[in-house]
Image (tube, rainbow, N blue to C red; front, side):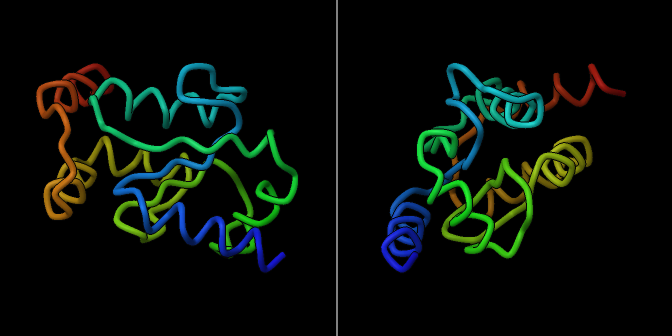
Length: 120
């Protein structure tokens, strides 16, 4: 488990934005992962995706690492942000814009606004 924890820690710290998910950003394998990846993709966020279905040790390891029981899990600048419900709420409230801006993460503000308009 230590090797997996080290691998996760290195991935989270080496990338500005990381999404641990079921599937990939191009082909999510569950609705929750699809929702978060869809938001990030639409907003043109450059992020590292990690498919937890490809490695059972990582699938369990990420839950232990964050002490969060579900996937997907979003990390920004090494910090755990949340899962699908939290990311959706942050997206709709505009908090995600602030999070990205404060952390120097480039995103398409117009796209973020369009997501909010479509869900108003």
